[in-house]
Image 1 (cartoon, helix red, strand yellow):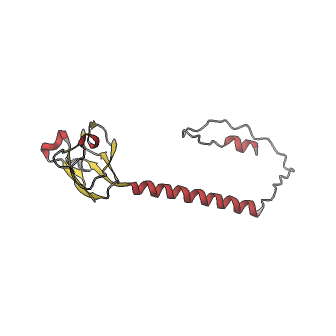
Image 2 (cartoon, rainbow, N blue to C red):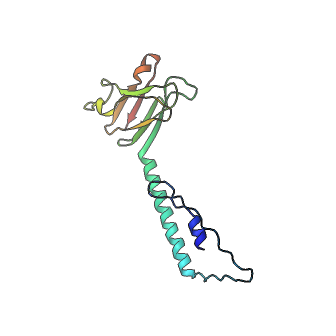
Amino acid sequence: MASIAAAVSVPTFSGLKAETKAAPAAKVASSTVVRMAPVRASASSDAMKNVGKALFAASSSLLLAASANAATVKMGGDDGALGFYPSSLSVAAGETITFVNNKAFPHNVVFDEDAVPSGVKVDDLSHEDYLNAPGESFNVTLKTPGTYEYYCEPHQGAGMKGSITVS
């Protein structure tokens, strides 16, 4: 049994796996009988309850995280077209929008200071640094109800613009 436990690698908190070398299995004579202790039913059911609780907690956390992210906006179409996809959307106040670099990069998102609700500071929302690789992303949370218009600075002339309505 000890050699089996040594062969199992357990992920650590950092996600890295510990490397262990299994010890050579001990030779067991063919006449040797290995007996295992019986497992109590209550211990097994307690373990199953704990697994069920852990699965419920994990799924609840995932559901809460998913509900906080209202939408994902692709920067660049799947076919390489310049645009935000979708180009307009509606979310509730306080929800988060994720902008993901898709194709035809570099892209950025600049909110138009003349086309946001009164009192909103576009510098707090805009992401003027370029996203240069596929999959790069950033999040923005819009808290004030109204319409927010934005554009991609290098591709604004090509019509790469969008809007978000917050209720």
